Length: 352
Image 1 (cartoon, rainbow, N blue to C red):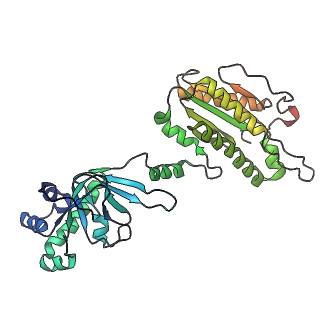
Image 2 (cartoon, rainbow, N blue to C red):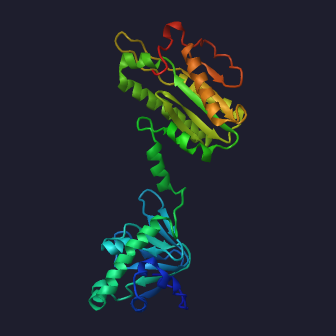
Image 3 (cartoon, rainbow, N blue to C red):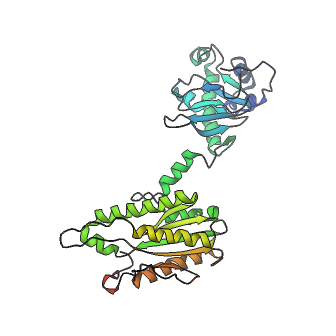
């Protein structure tokens, strides 16, 4: 360990620790006598994943980062402990191995129990009642910690984001589910925000003629277009709303930019490689109905705006589709040679 020069520290946090709350005053004095003070420089390693948890620690000063090693990149910070926190106690109580690395986020001072050269077996033989009470105290401490006392977990850390993504991810396409937008809109809505929704045209014909597996693959290809758009924009979320209705939510997006992005999606879907002909069925060429709107410019009520955009999407799609349309603006002319689906190809139902 990278140790700092010795000086005197306040040991009150040790005496007040929940872990030692069931001890008598004399037993607490015993704990202090069998503990050691550790002083770590910033970046100094406290313990490593896989090491036997022979000690636990009370942080007096500084901060301790809990890290998870990654082979394909830098270590991920799982949590950061602040003064008064107890570290490694759960693994210690279970006589298990530490399941993560711990290092000083800044120059830090901790108390280690048992101290240097001491083991729980040796201490238990001398003071069994005190050791039993310490283990009982660890249960109380874990309960308190679950309530968030003395522990900071950063909401934007990648491991938390990964858990959130799994909860909200559509398994078929990797897009964000509509439930994400419903749950998080209060946190991600930033003026102005663009909503772009897209529904592939004649999709029922593709599924009926080629099967659901081909339809699923087509949705994956469309999802790839949406994900690529988000990467190019540098912000936003590619979404799957209902069935084959997908799109983008983009915060801090003016109307001019939203229109450009919507037009880009419209063109990108039209240029997807066709599904090859199969037997009596001709090649399937992709096209889409696209609608877009901007909050709060088009409507200050987000829920109302969402419903307007979605209703416009379905209404336009039912009349033949193949159109780029805005909730509050005139639809631009179709590209040369395009006239929508045509009545012979009009979708049969909104859920297809």
